[in-house]
Length: 187
Image (cartoon, rainbow, N blue to C red):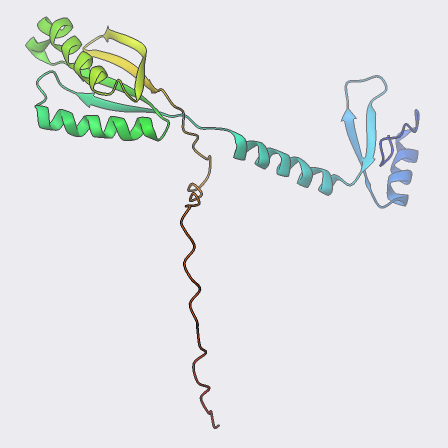
């Protein structure tokens, strides 16, 4: 193929290289498994630049959803649990999923199904306005876990901080500004 995508037909390698050099371009093998192999005359540096820009643009448009984990114990006090709930709410508002884990030790495991389920039920009820249960509470070894996801997905940009949103305010009257007096410089 030529630089504009036109067919040049079956040409031997040395002639194809001569044509590419004559146009100050590169000979790139596009389909090596074809019989005969398909090559194209193009500016390979420009091609790599364009493909990297396309990939960069695609990455900008994708959303990232992470799974954050919050660990609690069956005997976690109310104030500490409220602090954990604030963290869960913040994660959900940012658009992340949250894995809530209740860990059991020793004799707590005997009452795990009752106490752990109550803790998870309390957490899920507390955040019901911003989240929905994606994975119901289940036991895995010495831990009971549930996954909650946000009801409204807020898109997080892949790289960097979010752009500030424009505020709608009434425009203020323009201020009259005066330039400072010029200073004489001798030197």
